[in-house]
Image 1: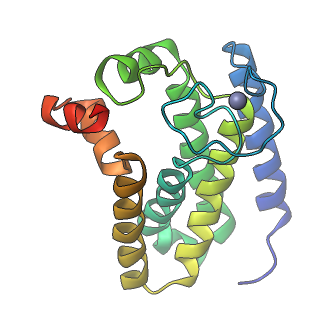
Image 2: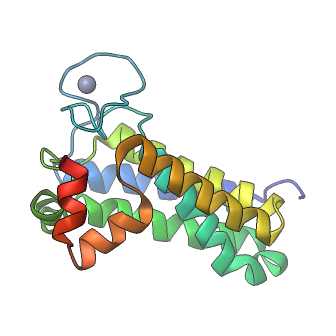
Length: 185
Ligand SMILES: [Zn+2]
């Protein structure tokens, strides 16, 4: 791949800055309330979940990028910078939506995330970055490599935290009680 264009770099910086600004405006905090500078939090059942930089949900966000590349790869071959920015805008839009009261409450009611009160801004920025990394990985892989990566990360996520991108989508759209029981069990 050639060097990223000025449009791609400037656009990336602008999307990250605007997303952070909107999240702060929505009342999200910059970092975990606990104040610990440890950059990761692997216990999804703690107050630290989605408040530090790295947590198990990074796997889901990597997969967002893989999926976006799958959807945008035709455009990516013609205008790599435009395709990249579209992917980031969608992810940024999701990060913002995910941190509106509507979605936060839906997560709390119907998914594993009982104490979920929205991501910290640092965590949202890391999620956005993970999506970008997933996109760039998918760009280098053959299509079947991306498919394998998808299933590998989903299984890893299910094993690790009893949650995954697929389950997340199912539970957000149409919660299944049996899945919830398994997740809290
Ligand atoms: Zn913390």
